[in-house]
Image (tube, rainbow, N blue to C red; front, top):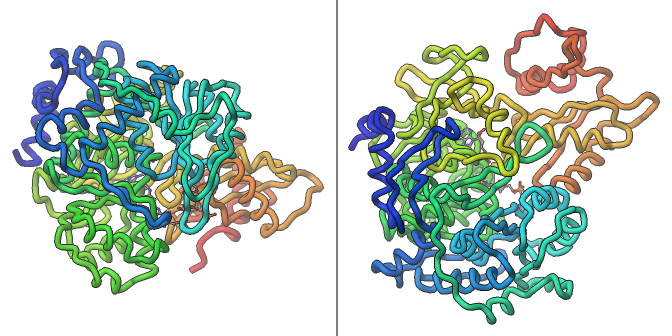
Length: 626
Ligand code: COA
Ligand code: AMP
């Protein structure tokens, strides 16, 4: 079926389209009810089906000829370690760890927070939770204790699974003190902490609460896969929204499995037995979908890489991995390729490796800027696919679906909507826009399988955050346009979310931290363009009456505060003290215009502006100097 045929089929007859996809998976009880929109307009998929995600990812393959195929390669240049687990070996480890979690009281529906670096045990812990029908919530290792505490208080886990340390290039990052601090800050009390001691650093254990991974596994009885309903939650993954409180995106089991299995072939062109490498982190949605669940459900070999694109040891790291594991498709973020380009602009290191296994390069997390696209295509000599997606959707909304068709690529475009997504460009007042007109990217309801079930603990937030702006549509929060051929161009967020080096963060949350500085009366934080990291935050700060500081002093203090409260990934290098902030007469800070000025973009001064001269003052400070 061509892309166009598949797209038309999924749009005109979603039930049959997705039923066919569901039929490819091993359900315990096949669903008869394909999509139900009675309870929520986004849709609940396969709600009467029964299954287990871990069973689909492991047991099914072990029983059907893949027992000895490698399920996951672990490659850690930072710890000088490599290992590989076959499907049979991974299943054995997962079943035992599931038994260990059960022995600590974890049952179907209970939450488990996983705060781990990129080690094999992170994937084992995730799969073990899904085996029990428990709900995992993985927290990215680059978040600080306060962020971890917020997530613990929201998810209310019975158990936290962690590790003694992470390793960032050559730095050993102690995780346990961060977790201890988070558990002190949180009001929720956990029953147990299960900790993997790594040889690089031994963690202190609290008797009665903390248990060694190896000890709990040694005593465990392997657990069988527990049947769950398709729409029972598989995981909660917190993501930054416009406010300081992260949103707990809840993902179901059945819709998620069906969608991921479909995308492995349709988008990525992968067949069972192929090697797929998502060079991301299990703490992000890309890691959930394409390091752990997608490749395993599809019977592929996946790779868990504890390293960077550069520095571990050099900018040839990605090429070494592709050669060593015979990677067919790699998926990473444009920022990673920009980092490689900076170190090795002519691809000299790449020439040392055999990339003959590689068929396609996929990038996401931020817009793939045309210069990086052209560079990567040229030096790698393979099709490079920009594809657009979000934690909320769990898989890509737009892509060049190489498993379906051979569509020509256009630099700067993430190509076309994938079957299942009915994409529209709407004006701010909800009117459809014409080709090449920029607007809000909205998706007509219902959403395809795998879309978020809701926001954990806050059912109303699904409606308020995503469905209220344009009735009948999901508001993506991204802006862009379609050209005359229907190609989609994503131009950036229309809200207060920014992406720093592929890490999604909230400027609203940063404003809360900046606002806590003792000298700061008021502030605005916006995302500005950055050559390497895509975006970086810029703070404009109004000091309290009588307070004195300088930009240089303030930016260091603010950077330290952001690091301590949000985490090291919230890097800040730009802050300016201003005399006034541009505002409307009703007092709303004109953040979008500040962003436009800082990025050298056109803007219209609203008639509601209180003091037009305030724009000149900030333009002097932040407009790009040509
Ligand atoms: N645990 C602890 N600390 C972490 C961390 C983690 N999991 N991840 C990042 N950090 C720290 C880094 O060590 C660094 O700390 P430092 O300021 O003390 O040096 C800080 O957070 C910023 O890290 P990062 O944003 O990764 O920047 P970098 O300059 O170290 O590396 C890149 C730049 C481009 C190489 C790197 O960001 C990268 O590989 N990005 C790709 C991201 C990605 O794949 N995203 C998923 C989307 S598909
Ligand atoms: P996350 O939820 O962390 O995956 O971040 C999702 C956000 O990242 C999207 O809303 C976009 O703003 C941005 N994003 C992801 N992929 C792309 C892409 N291919 N092009 C442009 N922006 C992207």
